[in-house]
Length: 360
Ligand code: DAH
Image 1: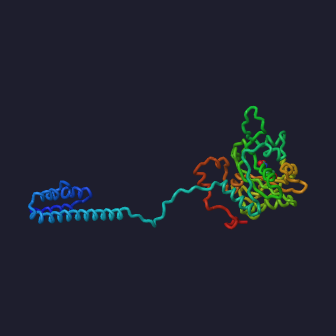
Image 2: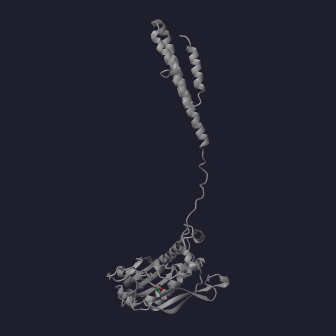
Image 3: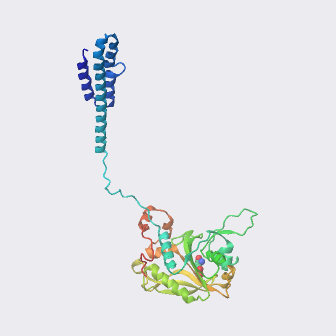
């Protein structure tokens, strides 16, 4: 049959030149598509004599097959080079270190709370908690602060709203962590050794007071606990917390309704050059309130004062943080200023534990 060699040469060349899928498809349609040149030629077979057909039929079939396989081969080779190109351009170095990402920091309050817990845990204390919305029985009455007691005024208490006609006893935002003493003894009885860190609230705002702040309460009740145990415990705590061996504490007689006798504790410090140093100089700074738990408080919590006695103390966590880490203004603690948080915050792995070495 005429022209077969020419068709073959023409289409194989076009296939070889086709640079992408759509170019190949156009060649395919022009050659072996329904109206392609090869297909049209195949239609002519019908008009041929049987002898002519016997020669031309296989030739056309062979041509069609050859063009089809050339198309397949070209497609495969195009796909290969596309893959090569991707592998070359999309290469990435998995050994490169990751880009640094901004990490958050531990707030000084959280840090100091953990430090205090770690030190008291080492002394055998467990952590107790109580609600921040208290009723006035736990916040005041059970702590030997009856309604007419002047200490109720001193606390600048936030009272919860009461609807008219609702004459349930008032709820308050707890003004101190001391109510946790009552709740704990009521539930677990004596003996006990706990600390209770947490938020407390008073209506007060200046450089050293915020309406919400943090305290940690301590309570140790047993059959033979004395003021000497209180003194040793607090000295031991201060040595560990401030990381100074020669801390000196002064127990100053004071008054709290829930302890008898009561003592406020001052720590020896120096303010030389405007910088606070614990354990040096001859200044004294108040750091906590403490005393022997009042028998009425034990009774209110269901513990028999003729059998048990013990000590309690309460200190400001925020104040401890200011002292230890030299932070001058309490209000900044709660402003959520990222610059402040990055400056005063702690790395997340900087958490204290005894084997990690709080120096003692
Ligand atoms: N609750 C007292 C306050 O907020 C602090 C305090 C003083 C707690 C003496 C005590 C204590 O447990 O014994 O001012």
